[in-house]
Length: 195
Image (tube, rainbow, N blue to C red; front, side, top):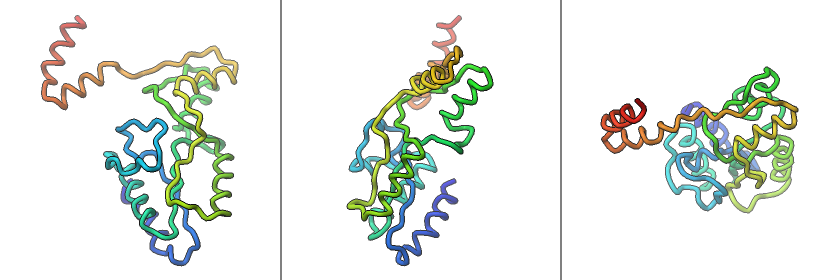
């Protein structure tokens, strides 16, 4: 994914001198998803290098935009609307209700979604106006947990289905034990505790 993302971007970036302004859609992932991103500001870019390939590719792209005269990053955190991929969360919620199934969530976290038509208006603004800065966070300003979003979908669709969080609460302690070299002892302790 890193290579394809960067190749696509670089094909545009290398001809930037022929463009008045060049915009690309960044991602919250470039701010490193392993860190807290609640109400993060543009100035916090580069606080760390993202650990995942996709975030790293977007991180490199933003560095290039910041050094350019006419390349701008519109950093998107979450978007929804017609044409969403089936794997996108709100689409997953709607499809679950339509299939008369409970809505499943791997981990409850906070998101700031923007509707795709609002995003189109933002793009129009940037096309018509020269930006002062080279990277902008694009968000609605309304934060919701995934559970809250799922519950809104259930209510809007008059469904009596449930929201189920699938996270295994033992994952975090086991991951920390592995990182700190006491995984086998933690497994032994947990087995004894659960028997």
